[in-house]
Image (cartoon, rainbow, N blue to C red; front, side, top):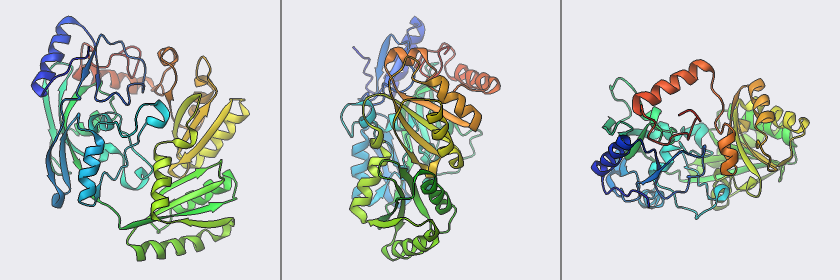
Length: 391
């Protein structure tokens, strides 16, 4: 049975008890991301599902504070009522990992730094985290940051805990920047260009003055997609200007109106174009290297089933046939040559125990990562083995 603390004090007590018994804990909200990362060496699950509720929301100040176990869908509904949003578009992993949709908690979103297609314009989840409360692996309650973006705190711990997968501290409360929703949106589709040319069009658009908020390429549809958001008159003008700007690329053009556009980008956000049987990888690298990576992977004979590009080619999602090492050797060799990071998103537990799920770090950075872990959690009580086999 999982441990189910009722409040922050209970979380601290549970971690101190685990520390005394040297009994490692894994941290969960609703468990929607439990299969991310390495298989942990846990003895108990620390469930934060009871730590729920929005404790502060000031729409005029664009700030919201919620306990870590608060369902994301409740926060989205609250923001919708004020025509506001989490601009970083937190990804829903259900299409890739299984389970119910809309089952994430805000704590899990921040712990995994789950961000979507708008990241290239709005930033990642960590860029919207103003402050937090947490309990470290020492059993100490820690508060960092506040309700404004600039705080003289010495260290920006918000950037550190976001994406740490619970390995440093159990997040108990989060304060986030929220933003107004755009009045409308449209998506310009350029079809029939082919993979290399379509990605070149996206890169050109990303450096243009037309404020394209999302750029993706779907090889199955042979379509480059460019999202424009804002007031209707602005969207229309920028769309027409962008079509002229990219006119030399040729191809067929079409436009997705607001509702179709939102549905399209939700599908991209949740990596649905590669959903299906096999192992899933997420590759982050320079946009100019996205196509080269896929071409080298093909040349290496990797059994690629499906893929697509986000962030103008800077993010590549892959689905490959199942293999003992999940094709890590081939993928990482290419990524190391081009520069970037390769993360194994989905494989069975045995594979995730054998293979480095996260890209191996250079020795100096690995040493720093270990020192940070030891500062927060010297006995490796929290999420032992989640990021690295040794801690």
